Length: 68
Image 1 (cartoon, rainbow, N blue to C red):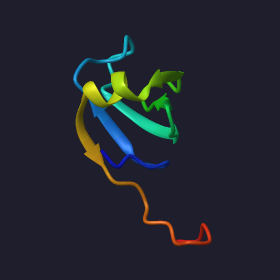
Image 2 (cartoon, rainbow, N blue to C red):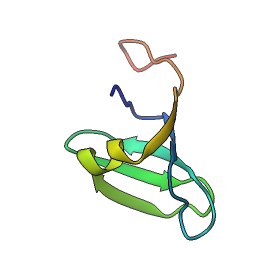
Image 3 (tube, rainbow, N blue to C red):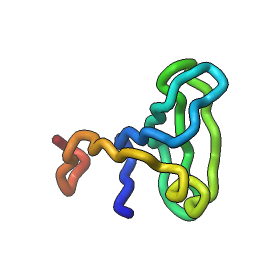
């Protein structure tokens, strides 16, 4: 799955605050995600995160220099 920084992920299970939506802050072997409901940040192994994704919403399309 092609997940990039800035994308939004909707997970199968809710965060304790009730939100299903997470913003991607970092990708690699681990994902750093921020809950869009309460702002809590977590690091998840890529395999666990990809298994729990229900919907993938593309973020802004960045060009080769970081510009939009």
